[in-house]
Image (cartoon, rainbow, N blue to C red; front, top):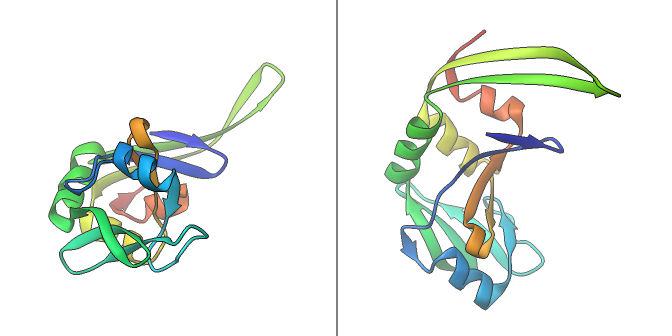
Length: 144
């Protein structure tokens, strides 16, 4: 998992329906979308009971099933440790560590639905799912 400037990359995952990330970028450019917010390019994300879709001007062009995304989060993050550190010159100070156990996939899907997960269509570099560490911690059954 990569963490920078507040937001954390949870995983990358190519769309299973519609066009690929490269085809999307060729046709529409790179974009970042979140649920129920239309960005300046007319791109958005819709979440239904069984699917998550990237839309262009309200039309679904790429997406995943909820079952696929649920399986992916369990595969990539069954357990997690989040370490927060600060660096001053050549000294690194570890400030906090959260140990998260037993990811609950439905909480991840709810975070997508609530707009707390952003999806970036990056062309040949794939599609990334990102969230703030405080949101990610809430996806787990046990937090130490």
